[in-house]
Image (cartoon, rainbow, N blue to C red; front, side, top):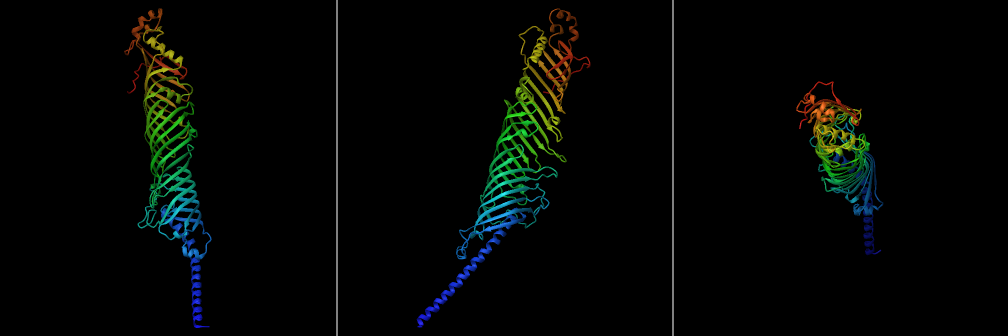
Length: 539
């Protein structure tokens, strides 16, 4: 063997040995690198969730699927371009500062893909995360202990993960009440998509929610976050919504199909909303007559207790415009909420209101001015049995649509004007005003004044809605003297007694009573009541 050949063989042996060592190193390094991915990804998932939600994390299981590849390829590419699929299940997050409350988040399944070459990047970027069966629970605001100095939470710099998109299906959002024993507010979210706008920034979203009562589907788009780990209820939320075909028939007293659009802003625990709503077939179940209802509203909703504050709500019922304001609130110690509303109807259409409130066709038309306070206390029983209403009203240019009643009014006007046979006095208008209070289905009229040409009636008394019973007492004043209300020989026979009936500024003054029912009232002289003055209602 020549020296040259020997030298070549030694060199070749060294190269082979070095290549083998390098290959073994690559194989070992690739294998080591592959075995490092799984525990590192698992620890990063748990660490991210702990810091993001300031919670203790329980994860029932996690699977990481890395596609087959040679250690050589893995070593030289460091995993770049290779997507690993991460699948987790049985995720539970317990807030560190609120151990007594239910988990802030539970999740059946989660999955995402990550480029192995980006696992050790900072920040780590994940294009999409898919969630299934998520339940997000918001504890009452202020119920958590304050974070201690140095505690890391969702907005801290250590959250080195940016998620491009989150897709969640079959989720629920539950807002816990401040008062024990009160039912929480729960929303079913059938589909939710969140798009990232950058680290620690709000995310845009599109959501489809199922509203429990009244049942219907809500479509919403807007912004959510960033997540407030130390007070989840303070997490910002805003957007636009569309609520269609909600069935109001689930409520005991009303029915119709609700459609509403609007926008809202605030936080998970307190929302301000503005919008429009319409119910083309709105009706009270007891009456059954549909009347179109539309509203423009602004409300503030406290998610922790369900209290709702109504700013002036502008509404139209048929052709009648009115405003209402008030609140739906829960008093301390009460299990149900109290409804308190102020209603102002300066110039309403009486026919619209009666069509809504009464069975059959309305009995009267005219202009209605109404100011009232409406209250529904947190009592058991039907709404109509606990409804409280107090206020005053005025009906102008009223005309009774039932001929029997209007004919009596026409006759009263003829006699009041001293022309009992003048058939041209017909279809006369009436004016009515009064002050009233309704409780236990009984309307008590402190004063009720009825005016028609030539006559004025002043009454006080009650109307029992449940029994349809009238019990009114008061006075009848006619402009004409008593003899002028008659015809023939009676007109002459009564002239001597005209002075006896002329009193209190009227040509004829009588004490009267009205009883019977609203459909068949009885009018008569009241001989059981001493003469008294019926006060006029406040203007």
